[in-house]
Amino acid sequence: MSFSGKFQLESQEGFVPFMKAIGLPDDLIEKGKDIKSVSEIEQNGDSFKATVMKEGNKLKTNLKGIESVTELVDDNTIVHTMTLGSIVFKRTSKRMS
Image (cartoon, rainbow, N blue to C red; front, side):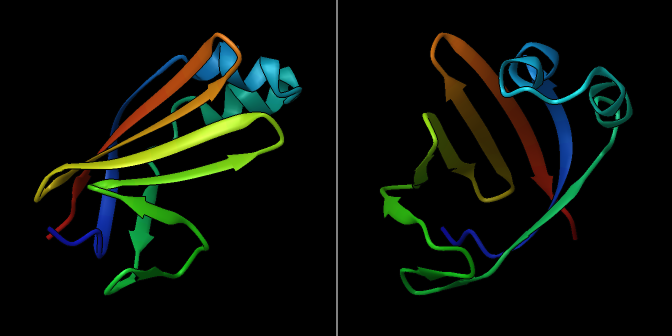
């Protein structure tokens, strides 16, 4: 399976507590909580546009105590999970045609 493609955000869990935990102001949290973003991923073999490591069908990064895992669960769905301590923020996106 390839990560390449455009993905439309379908759902997310834990957005508000995660954004509060990283210090985002309430007004920006309010603006961002209902945005249906589109993510584009470009993969060339094991190389990606962003610097990440591939582990099976997962992309993992760590930045300032935040673990980020993007998993390709099937040909058309990615699940992106960010964890800060015990707070988990999970986003599910579907590939756009």
